[in-house]
Length: 150
Ligand SMILES: [Zn+2]
Image (cartoon, helix red, strand yellow):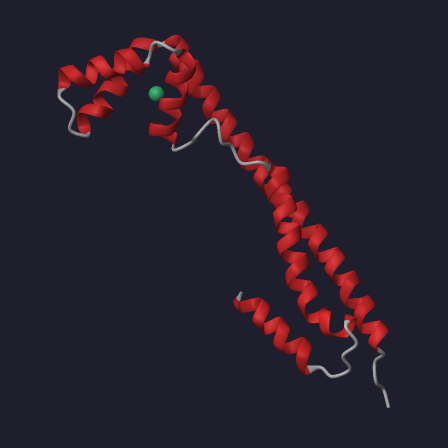
């Protein structure tokens, strides 16, 4: 006796899936949102620096190109031309100094949705055989293992 009904397994599995997927998604959202705030704060600092000390920033850029092997005079000229447009200047400083692409900041929503999907898929695999009417445990174990390696 003591056999757990198929229905119970499916319902328990799906409930766990939903709870887990939502909490994973919420956690991911929070973490990416705070990461993005940090990045935006760094961008603000750089933007302010560019406005307050444009010449220092231009020199900084020239030194960077020089350190990469560009002739001093050419490096200064490239830095001067690239610094003309403030938006472009910010983009270059962000990429070179912070390793950030301001046009491609992490999206909390995208991260949350994809982590929800990944978790739901992983949790759905072991339940799948029961949904399809299996009564033995091994198909579920097999699929769970396959999911782990995938
Ligand atoms: Zn800078």
